[in-house]
Amino acid sequence: MPKEQIGGKKPIKFLDTFAFYVFSIVMVYIFFTTFITIPKENVRFADTAVGFLLGTCMPLLINWAFRTSKSAQDEKFAKLRAKEAGVPGDENN
Image (cartoon, rainbow, N blue to C red; front, top):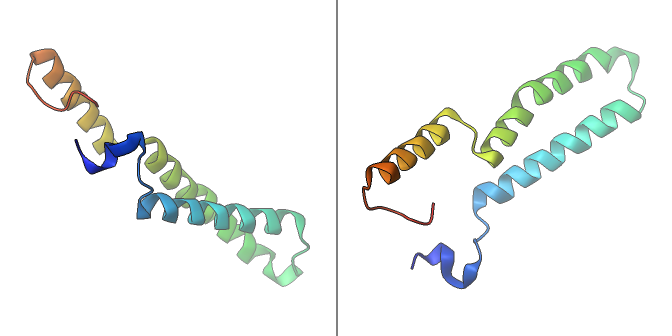
């Protein structure tokens, strides 16, 4: 039995924790730039930063969390094809 499945619990991995903190920091930044008054000369900088965070960081974290990347989908389809073909392998996934 793999280490990850002992006791029925999945261990919290570094990437899970890292993604949680990055997501939290992004949400706090977006909250503050939305509801706190920003000096007029810094508004464009804040707009650029929020646009970057919403356009790149958030989708990457969401795709990683739900495993919706192209490589994850290819891996899923390969397992499905192997299962349909009767190739023995990991039956739990």
